[in-house]
Amino acid sequence: MPNYTLYYFNGRGRAEICRMLMSAASVPYTDKRFEFNEWDKYRNEMPSFCVPVLDIDGQNKMPETMAIARYLAREHGFYGKNNMDMFRIDYICDCFYEIMHDYMRYFHAKNGRFWGNDSDMKSSDLNPYMQTRYMETCRRILPFMERSLEMRNSGSQFFMGDQMTLCDMMCYCCLENPMMENQSMFNSYPKLMALWKRVAAHPKITGYLKKRCSTNW
Ligand SMILES: N[C@@H](CCC(=O)N[C@@H](CS)C(=O)NCC(=O)O)C(=O)O
Image (cartoon, helix red, strand yellow):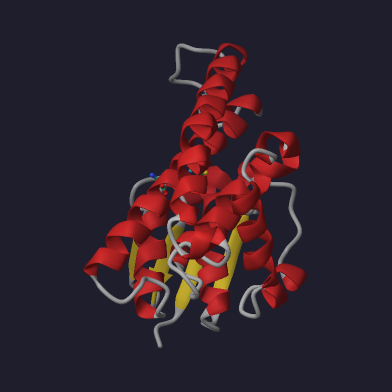
């Protein structure tokens, strides 16, 4: 098995799906976390100047959250059985990742990060726009995800039926912070909320959630 190092900030954020997949697959890896004030030291080592990045054997730094997640899911059996399964898993993952993406941009804007010197807009101007955009994305995506879940086994198991796959873990990771911030926004999606709890209780996940690093994002 390759020697993996995952680079990200000291938070769950975009990297959490990669950590969760590696843990569910019992893949050993180094979880390299750094603080925001250390970012200048790491930025230039990252191929697209962003994280997460998965380093393989100290030779190959691979960027992009969803490329890493899909690679891990394919390697470890969390990506369905055929091309049509992957099509469905992909659209569900991409929908949840839209929420994650807009949430992270809102979260960083709110905290005045990454928009500094070369942006014309101040964080105080960006913040309301990013928040509205994120909320709109939730309003558009969540009802669709609730309906997609209901398409298999009336939504009483996982998105693909009786097996947990990448897209169920994406549901968990992408909704974690939004739910912590505003639980009531999710009351209209009972099947999704039940799925969220089902993922947390899954034998491959529950141990990870208990022992993982505790951070507020
Ligand atoms: N398209 C990339 C975006 C990654 C991204 O924007 N990461 C943020 C942290 S959540 C980052 O590294 N920001 C550093 C910067 O903008 O300087 C992905 O999906 O992985």
